[in-house]
Length: 126
Image 1: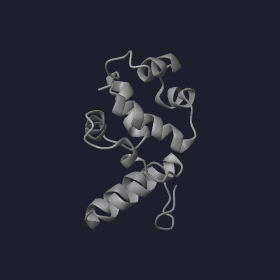
Image 2 (image 1 turned 90 degrees about the horizontal axis):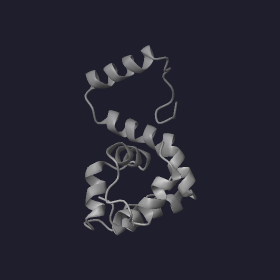
Image 3 (image 1 turned 120 degrees about the horizontal axis):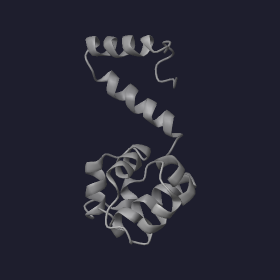
């Protein structure tokens, strides 16, 4: 899955955040030398845990990453406007939760409350 298209996509993701390979290594819990080998094309594919962490970091499923690596999606088309990572994940959760039936919303809120979450204004990050 380590193709020029995927490397370009990861590069765009880094540029959008003004990150370095060292930042990427820290956030994905891998070594900088691992990412150097990836960017040089010396690694045929990402390790499964690295692929999962990379996808989670950039809010991209493994399916989407595979499509990017095969050239089915242009790398620059997948770059979004970026906010801090946790705010983006919070907004995605809020959007998803708003599409769920009331009983699912209540269950999610109950579980969150059992972990110390306190209800706030809609759309506000925790």
